[in-house]
Image (tube, rainbow, N blue to C red; front, side, top):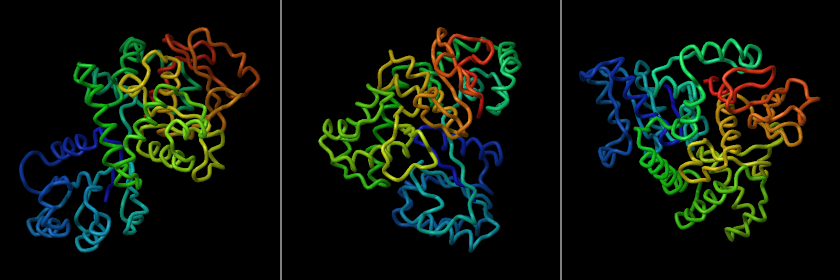
Length: 366
């Protein structure tokens, strides 16, 4: 089995259906796509579906929105045991627990987390510019060669500015107002439906969570004062921490800590960002460009690296060894001058100058 988790709107359904079309064509036969919130499952089981599909010679079962089916993990385990020659691909919310579900799927499933579009994927998806992904170590050691490669095929800066506004979700169609409206719909669905289903949030409290998210959207990067948040929302501190953790797992926020190795459950984060830059334009403050740059770095690098809040030693510490400072063209090395393995990421640059690199270059890591 292959499991794909991801936030609503990142393109899981589209990815699956495009794969089916490319791999199996449009004729009925070896592959079957089903969404588990279909009315079919009000009086049929997933096990019945798999049995009938197998009897008809089916080989690859694609199951979308598995979190809408209460006993999905137990029945998938039974299907694989009964029909070991059948391949299963399923997708679900970023909040579902694949390895800690009701049934033990740890030895039966390859699990993947699907992110929204990176800057590199945005160039490919929207602009038709295909570029290779680069490891962060290669970006830091050979930035000039990578920048030269990109500047041959495009001018990256205006496209980067566009990415920050409308590039993370793969459903932008040229109308920014409609795009932001769709993002708001995604946010509302996650809070109203998925957090009540998976995080134990009472439906009557979803308005409080939206108020919390809106407050953070207008005040990030937020150096966390839990007592202030609790007073503002008229909730206790433990509930606030629980909601922050849920919003982080739902991929609406990024919670940063100064030491990821010692983080304990319900520990107060050191800094909070919205999950991706497009959320600022949809629900936050569009004039907080410095914060949007920092959000971009956290979003892109946290997909494949450990990102910690740097406190007094730069903005971010990556994998415990790389210090990054983020800012405009006038940003200097004063704050990180004596820190080894430190770099500045700067807007409005096409080529690096020493250890000062273009900000957009970290968007090429996936």
